[in-house]
Amino acid sequence: MIAYITPIARQNVPEAIMVAAGYAWAVLMAALGLTNAVIALDFELTTWAWFILVDSVGAKLGAVALH
Image 1 (cartoon, rainbow, N blue to C red):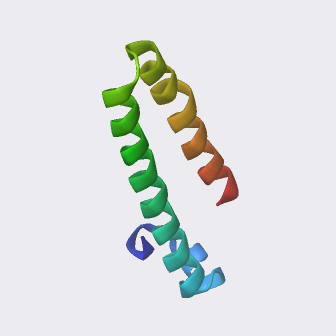
Image 2 (cartoon, rainbow, N blue to C red):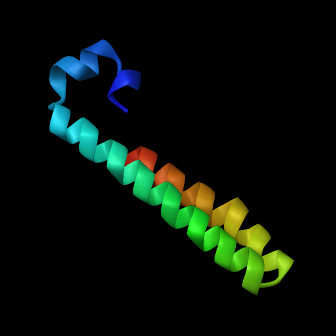
């Protein structure tokens, strides 16, 4: 993730924080992917559509807000 950080952020944010943020995004994406697979296979189409449109987008927006 460090390669995508702006130069000003690299100067002001410790590298450990940037690495931790990268791992946090990776965990979030893995969790969303696993949850997506479970919901797609075990629930109705409307439940899966709700998850994709609301929950997964909301989780990503929440992560952006935290960053």
